[in-house]
Structure formats: C-alpha cells, structure tokens
Length: 168
Length: 237
Image 1 (cartoon, each protein chain N blue to C red):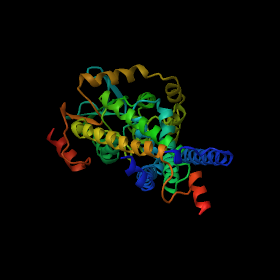
Image 2 (tube, chains in turn red, blue):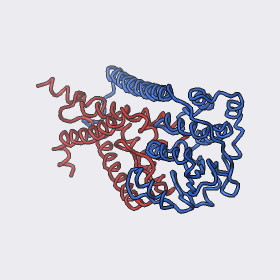
Image 3 (cartoon, each protein chain N blue to C red):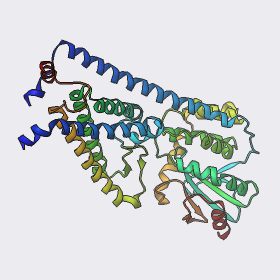
Image 4 (cartoon, helix red, strand yellow):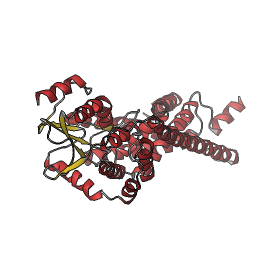
C-alpha cells in the first residue's frame, strides 16, 4: 500500500484536486447567480437565524468557486484542503441535523433547495444518505490533499521537488 | 510523506496571505453583488404597481364561526374558503393564475369568498397579514392583497415586507388614509392575525394555498392552477 502510494501519489493528488475542485466549482457556479434561491436554501435548514442564513447563502457559492479554482490550478492546496474539509464536515452536520429534526428539504447543494412535499419523504431521506456519502468522499479527497498537496500539473511545487529539478 | 511535509519559509508566508486575501476579496465582492441585486430587484418590483387602478371598495366582515376569516360578499350560493400565507411562493402562483377569476366571482356577487391569512413563514408574514387586515378595514382587502402578491420577493423574510414598504404598497395603489398607516405601523391587528393562524389546526390546513369549496377541500388534478378546472369545481359546488 505504501509502495503503491509512493508510486502514484502525484497522480492521486491530481485526481483528488480535480474531483474536489470541479465539484466545488460547479456547485458554486450554479448558485452564485441565483442569490435569492441560494439564500432561501440555507434558510430552509432552520439552523441559523434567517438574516444570517441569507448572508451565508450569498457567500457560500463564491467561497466554493474560489476554493475550487485554487484546487484545480494547484495553488495553496494544503490550505484549501483544510477549508474544504471543514466545509464538508459542516455540510454533513447540517444534513444530519435536518434529518434528525424530521425536516424535509432539498439540500440546495447545486442550486434549488427549499421544503419538499411530505409525500416525497422516502425520496428525500434517500437523498440525505447519498449527500452524506458524497460529502464524506469529498472530505476524504480533502484529507488526502492535506497530507499530499503536491502532485502533477500543480502551479505550486514543494520545495524539495524544486531543489531536485534545480539539481538536474 | 517527508517530501510533502514542510514548505514553510518567508516567501511562502507571503503567498499564503496573498491567497487568503484573494479568497476573502472574491467572497466579499460576491456577497455585496448578491445583496445589491436582491435589493434592487425588490425595489424595482414596486414599479409593477405604478399604473394600478384601485377597484371599488368592498366591505369585509369577520366570520366569528370560522376562525374569524375575512368574508367578502356574504350570502352567495357558493362559498370559497382560501388559506394563504403572503410570503408563500405557491400562493403567489395561485393569485396570478386564479386571482382574477376569484375577484370576478366576488364582484359579480356569484360567490362568497372567505380569506384566512396564514402566517407561519416568519415575522414578515405576520407583519403583512396585519397590514392586509388593516386594508380590510378600509374596504380594500382585495386590491391590497393582490398587490402584496404582485411585489412578492423571491426571498422570504429578507426585510422587504417592512411596515414602511407595506404602507408604501398601500400608497401606490391608493390606500392613503392615516388610519391605515397607523394600523399598519402599530400592529393593530396582531391579535386577529394570531386567531387566523391558530385556526389552521381546527380546519386541518397543513399548507398553503388550501382552498375549500362549500366546505369541501379542493384537490387539484393539474400541476398548475388551471382556471377551467377551478371554475368547474366551483360551479359543481
């Protein structure tokens, strides 16, 4: 396993960056230009006071776009992995919270959002499970990037890699 | 692992702060852009009321037996009970699709319509419900209620339905009496708002809009609010 990781680490890092970065970029891009929708989606979780929830709804898409872009181009990957890991934990906690409180909503992860009709309860619960699994997977990408932030096609190189290439 | 672990030195610290600064800048600009576009949209919505012509006043009575619903045109052969929350987007769809028909039924005295104003979507629903009841005292419930939906913002509880804006809606459509303004500003009808809200349970109303025709729940078949479907249901009683 260790050997495998040593051999393929730059590729795995690249893949993790692309997957996590692309998902964040798409999720942010779909929400950034429908601010009212994004703001009500956050308010529908009924975790934050409405006014605060609206500001979070306005800010989150742009944060996702910024992190996603930096991950894809490979700049400050370790710091971005920390932030994206943290927001994945927040997302998972938020979904568990609505699930536990019996609130039926569309997560609004990629736009949309809001309350779901009670007749769709089974579907909504399945969606919660899928969302938690997806965010766990993305969180694992972030975890990997924390330990191995430098890989292929990255704008930023680790210092030892720089030295190696200077020596050649 | 060792290869990846360290990267700290003076130059990198600078990059780190630069990146943090850029991310913060993007987020702050985005929030400012979003807030501005929402509030411009809300203020522009008043334009929809620019050429509003106020209809003839219709007096409103309270039906004490039915959760103090607002009764328009009592004594007609058909009775329609409508439950709406002023902030509910589907109620806006209901009003824009069927509002005209309902108004005709009232004005031509073919139906008694009883409005129950739900206010479960937050403080701005309560405030708006209060203003709607104030308008009922001015015999202008129909027009005020219609214009409230015409300017409904996409975002609930965003600060748009403030008492100032509710008075402004009244002014724009021609409800200018001091009594109305006073009533809106002081929350004179809040008790009645609560009576309406509490009566939801008694009628087993779980969401809005909910419509009863002669006491029977109207279950629509189509996804949209189809005027023909509604008209047939009303005519069937």
